[in-house]
Image 1 (tube, helix red, strand yellow):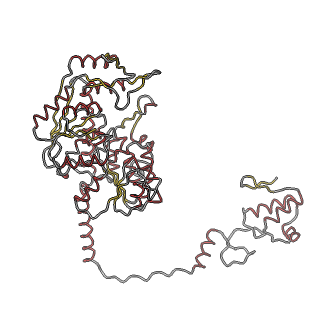
Image 2: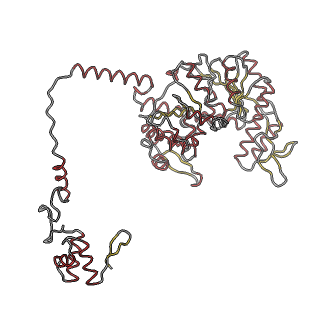
Length: 546
């Protein structure tokens, strides 16, 4: 999947070399891994995934690109401020002078997701130095404290948009030259047996099957089970002798119905030769789809990079009729817009970013045909709830983009190329104007600076120090000094007074006796020690008489 960037460079004939910083295979000849060798290679562009940022942080000595440009594509992957990935990203950000983030869905869940992404651009200038300041300024907490639930304060949404407006560049669909996207909702009904199981689990958190009972410990577990039943199958619990634990990733499941699979098959028959790009969530859904479309390849977590690249090439060359993809695995980094195709959601995801990015694999720049998106929804199930939630999130995202475009973003900033052109044109015009109106004027001679010695003496006199060149032992008449030539309020003067008061001996006599200068601190300390047994001790950096 990483080679997409290299393929795009070749496609547009750009004069750049691309290094893919990926791969843990260690070379026997060099003793280095593939990504270590890629990082040390001489390239114009280095491509690395977000999961490897923590590793990248430890390779600071190999940062040949320090001080240049950092681009975080699909920046919603660093939306969680306290995650290890985001914290590692945060630490490498100051190494780059130019930083850019790109995201089709910068707020997949809420406005809280915006903070860490914007922080990567300006290190906290727009929204605050830390997430706590951001929360306190724009949000209020509700519900139980440990749940960490926050909602926007009144008027805060617009304030956030205003704060980030100078950093944001929004591309509308018109600017991207996208074809229309048509969304179609197709519903199916659960058969009676499946409905009975569904209702039992929904109401009582338990359902009985021939193969055994299905239980849900809480509402979260029940939600996952209900999604599975709506799609046609449900995973069975994995039992051990000691306790019952969650199913493994691809454990045993029992099939309850095939309504959705039958609906997709019927849809394919209606569309004829138009290819289908199908999204699924659970592994038993992939198995059900591949039973219907026997030669259909699938892209999911177990698909290797080389296999994935071949599937993408075959798809864009029109060799694949049905392509099945797990939404989290194919939601980023794939370009599948070379042919006319329809998008089908066999099941939905709670993650709006993954949901939206899946259809954008087809509906993106380069696609010239209208894109039809079909949602297969089981009636009176959690499918309907999920669909409504995703539509609300989509509306919130559009609301943000419209607010940024309409009210806050500078008109010259609404398109990257327009902005660059207008700035360059304005700069050129201003320069030309300055040249035509330039008048030749005789510059006034620059003032000569005073010699260094005199400047030092002047500064020293201002701050009360002995001017440079003044003989040692003499005092500056400008300063307030006592009869012994000591600065009033100084440590020396204080010790002189203390010594005179305690011993009755004048400082001149003490100096003569100890063969030292009158302003010596040592003289006064020695005098106090010999006459009265008083000593000066250093106590934590401060001197005390004892």
